[in-house]
Length: 473
Image 1 (cartoon, rainbow, N blue to C red):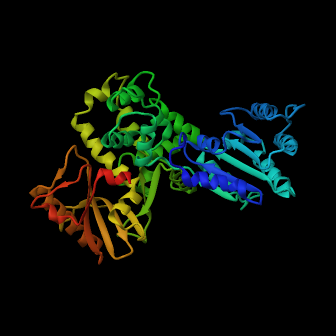
Image 2 (cartoon, rainbow, N blue to C red):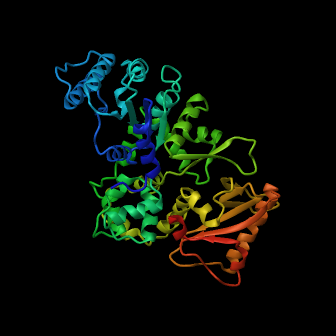
Image 3 (cartoon, rainbow, N blue to C red):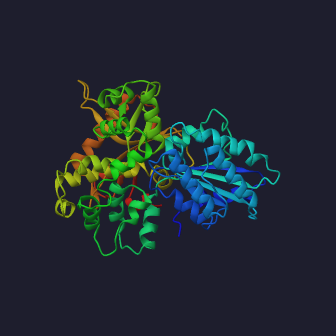
């Protein structure tokens, strides 16, 4: 059963209804459910399907391709000499097929593109010289891969024979909180919404990670088993994740490690200085790749829109790794269960809840009734000066209708109470923001909390509030 993905399924099914040949790229980070989506949508029925082999030579890739051709029904199938030969054999297979639409599904495409293999050239020739030249116009070619940057650069932004040849591209995004809730319900795992939010803080919306949750275990027990047990399924996922996405993961890891130290993000110059990656075209490419994979977000500072961008690490799993897995010296059986009430865990939840909110800005805007209003979203910070004490704002929603929502995000186990000191702090923060930003827009204070804000003599300061439930809409 597919959770969510209605638009993605609709886009895929539309391919087979077209009267023209279709070339579609499906991309997204590792474990996000691309393969499952494609196979389920087409009922596991393809004229031909093949999955590249990880860390294999060209000869091994061609051998695996030959085996897939045999499985699909091609007889007298010898080992291809090269990729041009391999795609010619695929042509013979497709020409024998009686399928109304010839759906060809190539998964983990980047693994097939080994050094000096001319794989892309052969794919170009297959599509331009044969697939689009058929009078029947019945070819549907779907390519897929976890190496998002490879798909984007080699297929979507190709400047050679595949330039502008794609007829469809589908980015498979992580689950939202609502989709995670649907997932655990289908799996019959009893989790309330607070548990789901706390799990999202570490797992993000990656379906595979959620599939590892077990019935009969509390959230803390699941966390211990997945992350802190000697054989925890996600204990070594960080290294495997970045190695699977990038051929040279070291500079990528250096950059996310630098960004993990500053929650509000860094300028390009700061990223370069902290990571040791030279401020050059290589840094540009790495930052673009990380953004395409959903690990970081890029935004212009609210009051510095003419200047450089800020890069912020927002991948929950990566941030959890740096906060906990790197600092736990050895296997710590029961670590999470024993530490669940420690102050450092509570502090982490507060920061992690902010990132959960950044992943759910459409839901926040919907709850505020401003879904149809164009907006930009920022984090904001200014250092103390002689004139003020400085301030930091978790989330700004800068709206085209002359309003800025200043969002204060608080994670708590009960209704949040605005005390006199909290109210004074919020007023100072709003005052500093108005002074430093010099904005002429109306300022609306929005509190985003777990269970809402307790009404008292200080709560009138806020114009609106968002609860945890609103993030599930």
